[in-house]
Image (cartoon, rainbow, N blue to C red; front, side, top):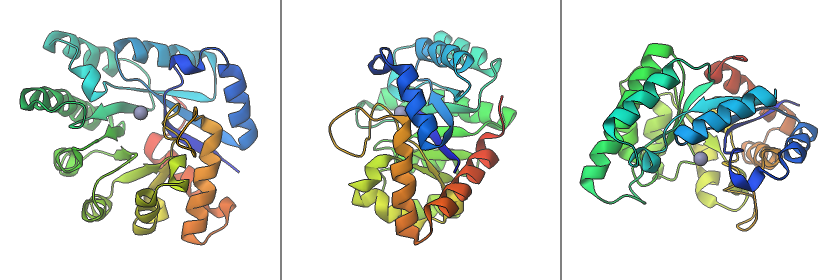
Length: 252
Ligand SMILES: [Zn+2]
């Protein structure tokens, strides 16, 4: 069985003491690829370094919307330019966040940076891994006609918007919290398997509310998706992995 985690943060300090053990458990669970997403200039460099040390890890490079607000325009432009010169599996974590930022001026700056990533995605063909917290509609509007491939990670928007995003051909990645979150369960039912992926957002969004999440737990998400789709775990995993290869390409 080939499993994939398309969105996690293994550069987080919560993994600095035992990353080797975490990766071993992922391998034992059948995980064949872990796309680690950068969130800031420092995090992007850490993710790239990790990917060079561990063959299981592939880098995605981006600027998390709240982190983007900490940069000047020139710094953000320099980071985009640096990212455009790196080998990476995707552009992420990028997007908009209206939960932790409520100022309209900040929203404009977030949109400016996200817009530049959308343009880079169009130029390079690399998929976007999108954070859309409390800004789901706006994120969708920005990518809808952009001619890019995009994955909405841990999507928490309303059901009618799920259908619009599905009909536009984008993908959704499902975390292990699908075990306890009825919103994700409904999303899995509403979207064809060919448009789903698995993630952990580790160290966040674990199968239980408390405790550190890790890539091995994508297996729990795959089992839950299989149950909801009334398929075997094996069939489900195969389709999800094919989706991953289609959207993120082979090794970089
Ligand atoms: Zn994340």
